[in-house]
Length: 127
Image 1: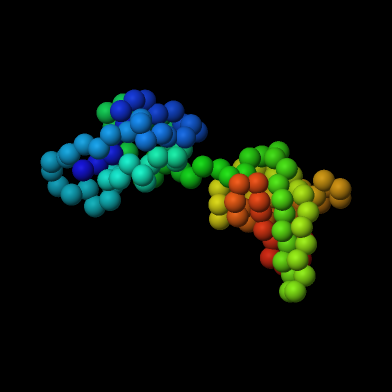
Image 2 (image 1 turned 180 degrees about the vertical axis):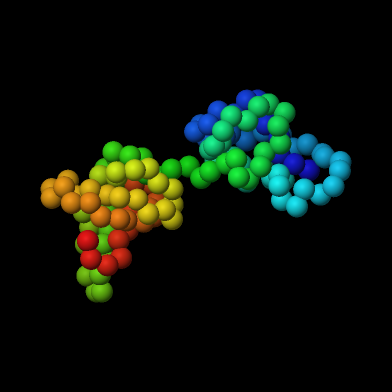
């Protein structure tokens, strides 16, 4: 079995499960070259246009960005026993686990932070 697009999928638009179908495939095993589970594709973003009828490859999809460029985010800073919370402005988009630049709106200083959740980033160590 492999996951196939039942309609054209556009880059940057989240894939809905209703846009996909499972299709039996006869031939050599694809050793993971194609997705075999709709849940593995639903909610992800195509990196390129995927035409209806095409099987989906994992490398054609990316995780949705939890933080968008220009968005105000909650920043949590942990340094030793100190814990600080402040707001910052994301300077690029990022998915969970990615490190993105954040700007402090008061000082205009930029610092790296790891995306932890929608609208939330974390810094471990000094700003």
